[in-house]
Length: 119
Image (cartoon, rainbow, N blue to C red):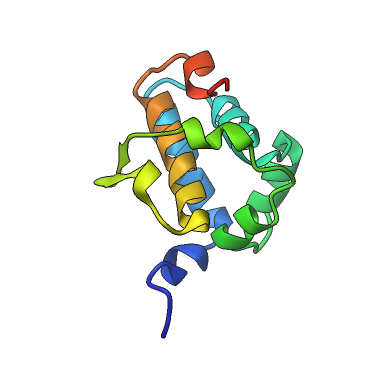
């Protein structure tokens, strides 16, 4: 039986990433801030994020191949897309929703030092 999350996992990172950036930029934030949040979560450098966005890597593989998922990501809580992040069972989907939540907080004007949780 197919995983219902496969549709998200199989999306192209090159398609998803500009949507995340646009969401933040429309609200007066920068692509660099989205990269900082993405890097904080995954361990990717801005150059690695740009390379991934120019490649055919899937969204799922972007997270599966992350250099260093931040252990403090468990501090990312709240609701995104009507779902409480901390209640998502599947670790990969929880990580993906963590990035959604970080970008959402940026777009809502939260200061960067609050977005990037400190343990």
